[in-house]
Image 1 (cartoon, rainbow, N blue to C red):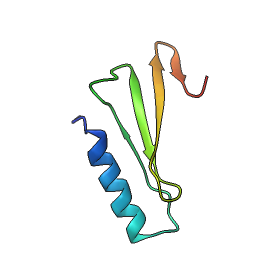
Image 2 (image 1 turned 180 degrees about the vertical axis):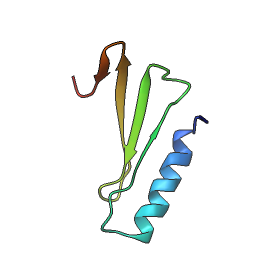
Image 3 (image 1 turned 90 degrees about the vertical axis):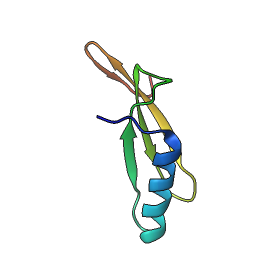
Length: 64
């Protein structure tokens, strides 16, 4: 699995959103700076939102 820089994810989300304004595009990635997290990027309106999902031995931690 190739890790993507968040700038690449942001560009892909913006392109998808411009193609269809009614969609909420999203992407998952792993960033080398945050190895214990899966990063979720999505674009519900005009700005990209980045959420960190912590990977734990017995599951995931998202928003506490």
